[in-house]
Image 1: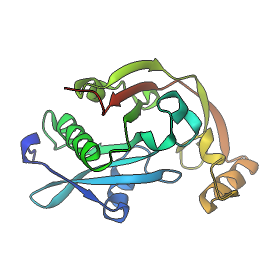
Image 2 (image 1 turned 90 degrees about the horizontal axis):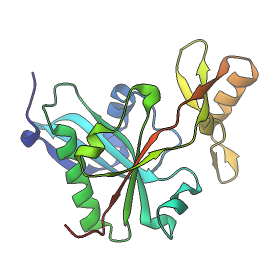
Image 3 (image 1 turned 180 degrees about the horizontal axis):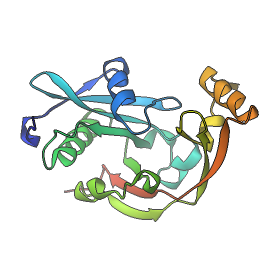
Image 4 (image 1 turned 60 degrees about the vertical axis):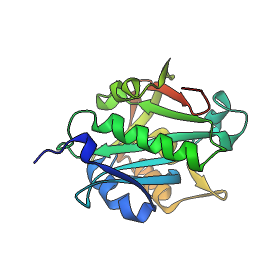
Amino acid sequence: MSFKARELVISPVSLVIVREFIERHHYSHSVNGVKVTQCFAVTHNAELVGAVLFGAMSTTAWKKFGSTEMEVLELRRLVLLDEAGRNSESRTIAATLHWIKKNCPQVHVIVSYADPNHGHNGTIYRAANFKYLGLSGKDSGYRDTQTGKMYHSRALRTKYKGEFKPFVKRLRDRKERGLLVPVPLLGKHCFVYNLTRKP
C-alpha cells in the first residue's frame, strides 16, 4: 500500500536502527567502509520505510569542497521503499539537511553522487536544489564471479588504523583466488548543497 510524502516522519537515529534495512533494500547491500556520521530513519505509522546515512568522504576528496574535513559531509546512502509516494525523496532529503544545518554548524557542504552504473542520474538531487558539478573520473571495480555483486576498487584498499578491515581482507583473498574480476566503471554524477547559503 502506498503512502504520501507528507505522512513520513524523518528522525535522527543510530546506525544499529537502520543498518539491516539499508543492507536489505539499498542497491549496495552494504555499509562497509562508510565513515558514518549521522543516520536518519524514515517511518510511516511507526514502521521503518526508509533510511538516510551521512558520513565523511572516504578519501581526501573533501578538499575539493571545503577548507577542512569537518566542513564536508557526503550523503552515502538514501533508500525508500517503492511504496513511498511522489516527492518522498525530496521531502526526506530536505528534512535531513534542515536537521544537519541546525545541529551540526561545523558542516557547510553536503556532497552526493549518483551512480550511472546502477541507472541513477541524480534527478532527486536536482529536485532537492543540489548544484550539479558534472561527472567524476572513470574508475574501476570488481565483480564477484560467484555472487555477481560489484565492489568499487576502493573497497579493497580501505584501512582502519593502518590495517585492512576483516571485510577488506576477505575481498582481497577472493581477488587473489581469481573470484573477483576487474570491471571498468563510468564516472559518477556529482552534486553539492551549500548549507550556509541564504534562502
